[in-house]
Image (cartoon, rainbow, N blue to C red; front, side, top):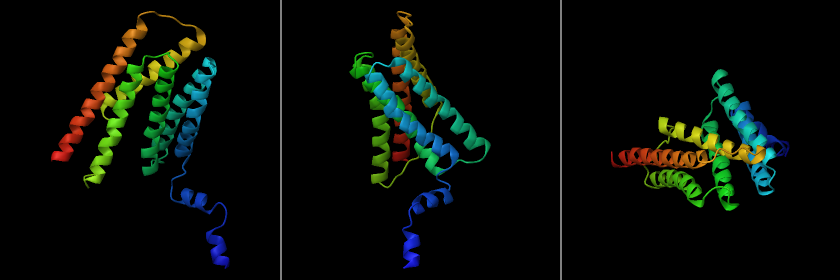
Length: 198
């Protein structure tokens, strides 16, 4: 009985995660970034643009911090490799979709951003179903695309929060975001097709 009690003791699953190296400091920071996502969305919907921008900046800074800690102190883990890009995409996709719904961004831009990530997820699932698992690793165009998406989202939030206006720059930035997103999707698709037909 004592052994059974220990097996189901409160907190045992959490301690197990720490022992297996899942709950490292970088991973905890990443989980915190996931928690920020709904808060940013609520701030946007309520029109509290300053707060939305501040939370977005905090999320961006946390992304840089957890990556540095993981590399500097050798705290990289398989769990972190999956959850870190998931947190980034959850934040970006949620913001682009929400800004589109409330009319700040055109629907076509949100569709482009969401479609690219949906395509990648579908490709991964198909490869697993066909017993040809593929590891989707960040490539140069993808890193550039993510950086531009983040910068544009930050620009829109700051513009709404502090009243910046630069006219036609927004249109050019949207075209750049869409172009890089499409290029990134194409690059991943080509790599995936090569893997599946090899």
